[in-house]
Length: 390
Image (cartoon, rainbow, N blue to C red; front, top):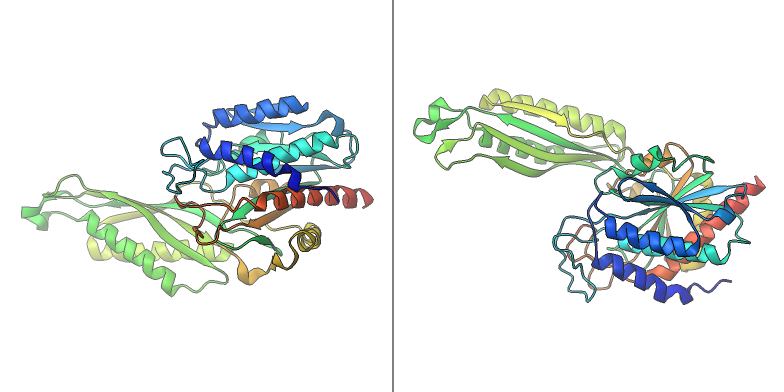
């Protein structure tokens, strides 16, 4: 059995560099340069995806019968880190608060492992170093650049770190993500001086009513699976003595079932019409961007993940069912639409610091990395060998 603990130092070196120098989506220039330099030394062929993405393969593996695609996200989040770690972000206002630094570290180290085994590894691996995942732009750029062509891959693999659950591994049986879309509510009232309030229509009051209706909808609507709708920003008004004539609200709908997504949107429209009638304001609800769709794990690959996960993690492996669906999404659904896929989750909370993803104090238990590397290595090898037999 291969010793993956010997890669720990390399894993930490990569991870801590990326953590110290996070960059926002489509701005990952130093991240991209670091990855490119490492890959070129190993002899990888690289296809550049504007402005910062890369598709990489070893020439020695491209003649293999099967190809597996492995995705690694590159971007950080626009937030100030508050972990106090010695390798905390040195880029003000940016943090790897979603674990992409760890994903990159595992993927890059795996690139090195493959270079060591290029004469014997049974399957070609195509690495996607994807920019702008957090803003939903990365996957479509990678696909447009040929990430799933020449040849069409036999499988797609992705993984994340869950930093609010103790050490282990989890895989969903079946559906593995939610449908998500940003929403906007544009509120139009009528400006007036507050001394003549009867001549105005208060958009801020109407907006507040809309926020209340959204809040109440979560309590009143019973979906087929987990779902919610919420407001994240509210902007309106310019002067203390003027009734605001407009207000803008933005938020999101998240649902594990498309039927609930559609029903929530329709019900909110109905409630906003009632607010219009009662306040005199005009409220327009819209979806801000194309929704992120849900995706599901391939059953055969799930069985491989269960077998390998139990071997690597023992009783700390969890096969999760439909009742454990969660309301996270990923633009990786675009890959799942075109090929069979699997999403692995490595549980990596630091005891006493179980802050969730996208939190300024989020930390990853770094002891997870060698285990993650071994699991990814064995999963891809297993997929290649078993697919070849089929």
